Image (tube, rainbow, N blue to C red; front, side):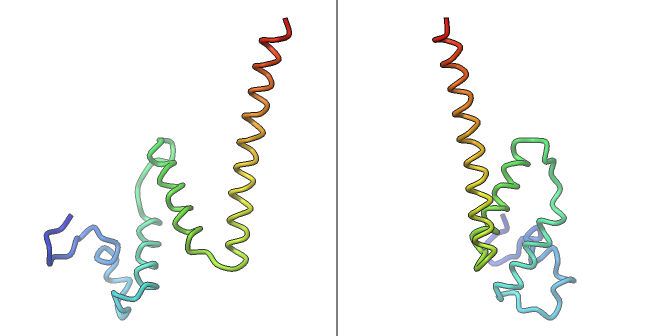
Length: 103
């Protein structure tokens, strides 16, 4: 974290200053573009729990910004994921109960 009054050199706006020349640094779209560039170049293994959770965090942030038909698609994707989880848990519970009570 940078001290008060100073820019953090690792902040997306500061890291991509050359790419954002001529854009207003206070514009929300310019900030979103800088964050997009940061996500594209962020190192991190997707094979770790932290890497997977950061992917979920990125998805959630993008889903919250989505509007119109994209928002509907995001909601459908989340509902399909939840349906898959519910079906899997239902099958696992049914298998366990069947095993214990069959004999």
